[in-house]
Length: 303
Image (cartoon, rainbow, N blue to C red; front, side, top):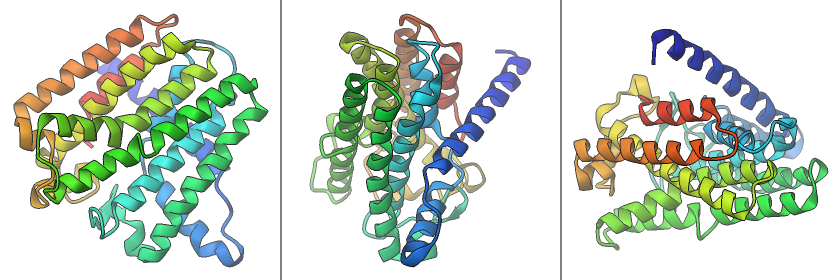
């Protein structure tokens, strides 16, 4: 890829991030009443400078199947980012990862206290499903039901939360460190919500069951590669790049791809998974060049 093409991708990504910010912000409550502190903490957690990768993946997956107006995606784009943000707020709590920084800013529990951070996470999770249900106003009920069911399942005890449970137990030496356990954690804690985003987009775009299953497989590869890259960056990255203190995984003896496989093998896994995901996406009815570039970008990211 030439420097001009890289620059062009960067500008296209920046526009999508800005648009994602506007869409998400439109569904957040204003800070007023007795709940004002809660609303402020929720907004603080949502505005921590993220790349809005999941909302972008949702809409780009929609475009794999249709060129119709993407506004139908807006409620689920906002909802999936609310779920992601709530999970990070709770991840950062002292009882779990005890992180003081997230994306270059103090974490929610440091700024607002533990109790308000817990409530902010709870609030975002509930608001996510209030928001997701607005998709019924924008598309036919069958697609809306399928998409909301996927979102709930992938975010729940058999998806993201299940992966978080395994991660906590592995850190406490209650589960044996094996490649199978590592893959389970990556597949559920990180990949499940990426699967939700991409499957919801595909379903809203008109994907049938078989096509949605292919998108799910590609999304799983993308999500696992994304988490492995995150493990690598915790070893090789810096605070300036990551916006948070690095080296915490090793300090807490967390089960990571680098700890179990070594950095070189972990990097090879990222490349292999990304190639497989791109091959699946390129085989779908309406190949999306930007989505392919985004997957490549995610595999080589430095933050």
